[in-house]
Image (cartoon, rainbow, N blue to C red; front, side, top):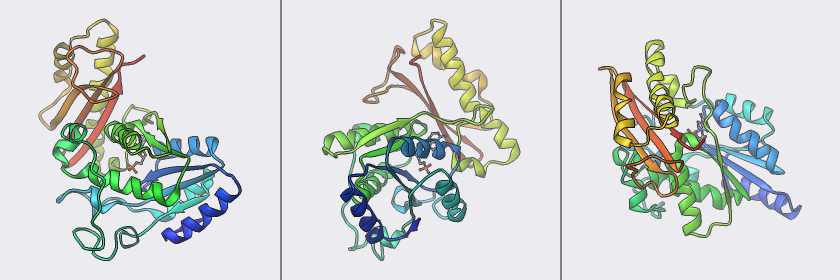
Length: 285
Ligand code: AMP
């Protein structure tokens, strides 16, 4: 069922909790694809009831980003979600979540700010305030749905690590379930933003997975020095790609690595034209 208000969701959750049913939450911004569906599938398998939120969260977009043009396909999302066994598709308006003026208004003033050390790097460096918006909306969704489990994709690995930290630090009684990256047949990580790519850019976008997969091959062949592994990436980059970052960091606390090991995640962000794409790979076999 499609619900738009917090009150409606709360009422339904209350009924389920009375019956002792477990609840899984899959937070999304919609434009659902197979990546989202893998999270949904896991929740449907693990929990008695599954709630998917579809909300393009204004407070996690920075000025000049794609908030206005972000793909909104609620009818299709609802059908995909319900066919996959979802019980509630929760699609609130920004006003429902944040009040009339929602940003910088007296209606909404309380933010959840994740630790600086986790956000002053990778995506947080260019998207200042992004993870404040993410943690705030995820907290709100946790409070509204009160799930037993919440499902997050490793596609957004920095987000996943920050959410896990927030849950631990604030003793939030929810188990975070990480879900592996789902890729297209040619290896491109699925993303709602892939829709922005022209056919030519779609081919160029393979540079991300080419770099990551090649680094993993080199690592497996015995190269552990991060500088040497980074060098291997440059042969894949062409003048039309602008590399935002290629970094080797610890999977738990995002510390930089000099020597790669099985706790290392390689993170990459590349701009293909105006489209910013991210991907990552774990060096753990
Ligand atoms: P989004 O709608 O982009 O905010 O994503 C909602 C959730 O789906 C996040 O936890 C993402 O990490 C996850 N997700 C998005 N794309 C993928 C993918 N290709 N594979 C696995 N999870 C994904």
